Image 1 (cartoon, rainbow, N blue to C red):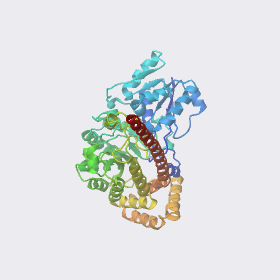
Image 2: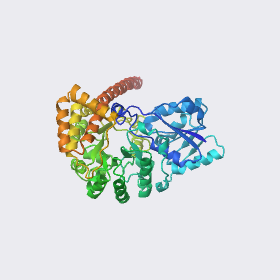
Image 3: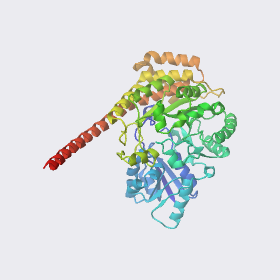
Image 4: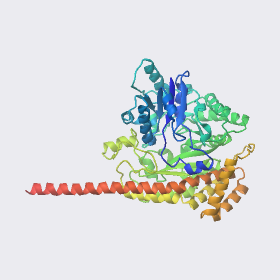
Length: 530
């Protein structure tokens, strides 16, 4: 079976970093870990080719070569997923689709012309799909409520990737999260009981990437890496030895809950294993909103202290923030700005709340008759898909203003500088690598843009020189985060333009509806009077 794996294109987003990646001749931040894992689970006597459309287009020869096309997508990729399914059908190819989008909204994905829906986690449903193909079935839906034992998951087929095109590689240790946040679809897709791989299994995946020549950052895609702290610590003890033996070939980063700050042994172990960053779901500094959305783990300790404690251990904190929770008080956007500035979080992902399919929030809003669209699209350029508890125009205006201010070039540079001054440095030493011409060119570009052309010119050089003196092991890392600011110079304008356009359309439709309701009431009054 000649199998073509196709990963749809992402729209421009907070995480796309096009301008920053272009500096180092890379096309995408992360590879499609799901598809290379699919290729490892499917029969190994099949032939595979993988095309990530965030890297390049599928060639006509590749479409012609394939006996079968398999795609995976998140909801945000739905537009290109639909387009690629149509292309595959024009070539007469059977199409199978899985992943988070298909699992959440199977009817919608089926309507695009999909032949096979492979829902849930592939360790269980992919063998069902293969058996159906062996029986000659030309369509089908394969699903399960069972959660697989991920300790049986094979090493992903990383060799299928065009590895030089990516800034980071991806690995996974666990699936699931023990918490109950109302808006989160992770617990819907993967459950509340974190399941982990074995340390030996995880290290075998790192060893495979090492064999393939990878020597840059690796992102652990776990939605909450510390969901099972006992197993994480067992992993880290063995990972620490592996890193020493291999002379720390990778920097690692991941996602975790903010209760990481409560476990000093765990933070110390992560830093010893060459973790240098962690994404935290802060969501909001408003404790009332955290309670409404059932994110109780963020209310147990002061958030500012927790964030700064994690950074002092040497983990750069990136955080997610949301505006639009029920009962939210006016000025929520300003409070997010205040929190981000106080904690010196350089990268603060900020978006308006979306009710994702099948989440507790989605079910509650549907019951209350407040859903405007039963689908959702998690992007920073998307208006809310439900009627919030305060005027949507107020929320949108606060959001636009906050996003614009957070990513003002000078304020971003100031925060990055303060964050790295606060951060601890790695305790171990690694041998210096000779920088490539691409890296040197990128550095010179940043020097020119941020140190000469822009208003940051007066502080850029002062900050950089001080960082080289105060944090000699972190100054190159600091400069790389400065470089990410190139993305937001353009992206904050895109956020403003698209949200303002959607808001104008929403208000126009609302005014027309209000006018129609007023007219209908007037007619009803005349009818009653008559």
